[in-house]
Image 1 (cartoon, protein in one colour):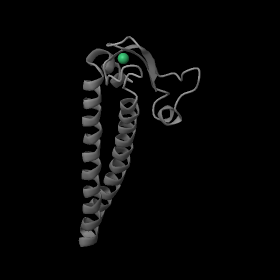
Image 2 (image 1 turned 90 degrees about the vertical axis):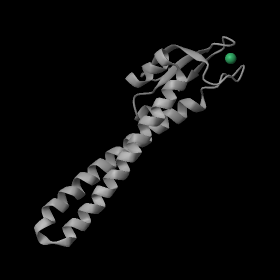
Image 3 (image 1 turned 135 degrees about the vertical axis):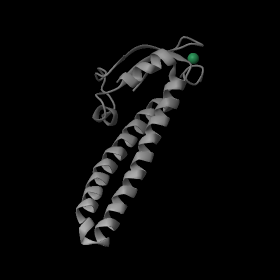
Image 4 (image 1 turned 45 degrees about the horizontal axis):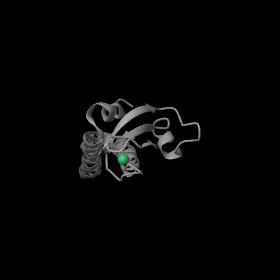
Length: 138
Ligand SMILES: [Zn+2]
């Protein structure tokens, strides 16, 4: 949630850019952990003396790969979901809005189940800086 507060302070474009950098860092982490996992398989197959080290590499690589992939998908899902709604419905200006209110709680008319599973129903009430139109991103 602290990441979403940056939309209010830094603007949507900077937040979106930062979100994509963060999620792709998790993708790099996933890739490196898969390499560690494969190395663990190779090391444990090479000799019996290295079997424990190989098993630890496989275990650590598996756990890190799972967590990294999950973080990558969550951050990318949120960025793409909000990015797709960042265009003003009245004047079509992209990412030129100020955040009027936001919340982790679901909106009264229901939230997006995908986002609710990843952080409690993220929503932002936005006001266009060009035309004053208000809409909700969720
Ligand atoms: Zn507008």
